[in-house]
Image (cartoon, rainbow over all chains, first blue to last red; front, side, top):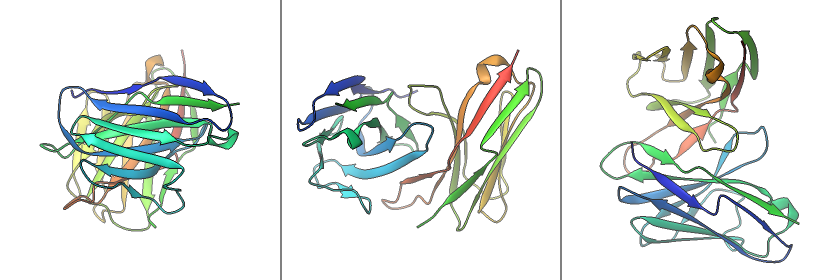
Amino acid sequence: GAVVSQHPSRVICKSGTSVKIECRSLDFQATTMFWYRQFPKKSLMLMATSNEGSKATYEQGVEKDKFLINHASLTLSTLTVTSAHPEDSSFYICSARDFREDEQFFGPGTRLTVL
Amino acid sequence: GQQLNQSPQSMFIQEGEDVSMNCTSSSIFNTWLWYKQDPGEGPVLLIALYKAGELTSNGRLTAQFGITRKDSFLNISASIPSDVGIYFCAGQLGGGSNYKLTFGKGTLLTVNP
């Protein structure tokens, strides 16, 4: 099946710094990518929908200035957590939709810990 | 917004037993999906259902898309230790640009050898 990668797999940063997470579709082109957030023992909550070449669409309650999303190419979307705080600590997962198929493929996730 | 109710929240079973879990929704979906997530990993698709009433199998897994389009169940037969993990249902409206997934809260499965 299609492969989606995320980098880094885990990151620890100090409060106030910004962290960039990359999501790449390795063997297909993804016109749409999705960013999710997952707290321990909780479900995946959609944060935003990222469309190549256009602005991301954020879900209600998600601060777009806090979570910057850039989908610059058909294989790469980035999520930047700006001025991170301990409450931003979470598991961030991306998925990518192969435009030829009606299926989303998930990345392995990025564990963010903000001290 | 749409919400999915997934049950049970957790299950503890013996190896070899069958398992059943289900999801219900307050509104309809056009696609139902079942995923498995291992600790520290992203979800992996198990079964996708595209048509109301559809019954689909994938090895020991069987899932059905409810006729009302507001529910789905997943059965696992003859469970084995590697079935351990969190199982999520997800609904999708689809069509046009609406490919967002709404996830259930998950079912934590523990299999005792």
